[in-house]
Length: 421
Image 1: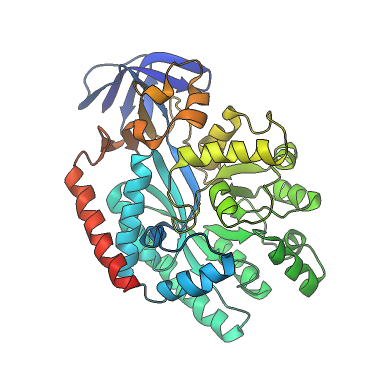
Image 2: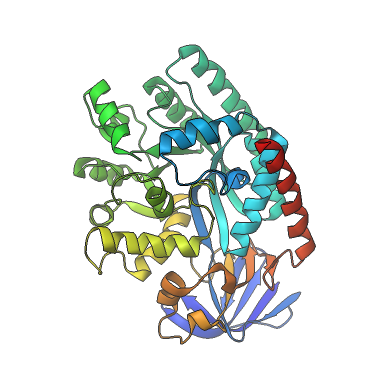
């Protein structure tokens, strides 16, 4: 058992100064506690909040952080990223993912939804680091039927292999410009058969949308709906260039959207996501960082702030995406997308929690805790992180040991140097 004493607890009803008891992996009580705990954490001067959920990333792309910046998207991919990715192996992905896990945990993230190569290496790294994850078996077919059969077979093999790890699973057809309609339909069928999620890039750029309409004579989302691709299983990353009818369909089918504002701005996708329309339609709206090659960090504090500011600036409306809304997108909405009873500090919910050190000059005074978290805080205020009832960050250090962090960083530096040499 873990007892957190005298913290300012962010509950659904507001902030209260209470003790919080954790038994096994759940919050057993708030306010009532029996001090017979194995671990007692002094919460004085700290705020207890739900941990963040990063709903779209490519974790091992930490290997490419700041390797290629300030470039046009297609040139960036073809000349810098794809050539390096061709050199990747499971060892590189394993260590790149471990670095990402440490970075995410130290910035208050308790869950990430990943799409990358060598999914068993991703799952192994996540489990060892003690972070929740949904690991995708990504695939492309480039409209080649033979390649589709080969890559789907490999994806299913990977999905079966990662079943032994304590992670959620997803099939990851990359996007409509890299996967055929037949491939997308097959992916949806596999997700249904295996009872797993679908992780997919949707309508990130105008070119993607216009090319699809020219080829198929239809909107992307409408076509996906006609083939049965849309469902509560689907996490649709980006979803920027959508029309009203498409947004309505996403809401109707229970699709969750993963908004990645920093990556969208850095790669210049051309507009801001239509949050107001999504909110009005009832789309389950969540937030992700994308990969470190296009962000360049995995800090959900930054992502929340940029999400809110981009809406206000682009649409000239300072009331759009209030602090409470963006905070919910990063916590409870995302937990809901993955059917996890998490994302809120409440009795009976999973103990995926973060203690914030309030004695930082940039989050004082304490007029509004949520506003401070969204607009003022940074990862430097994270003191303790608890995932599934286990302490994984203590006094700001991963596993309470700076040595473990240094070992991971040194290994990644060697691998990254070899990849770029």
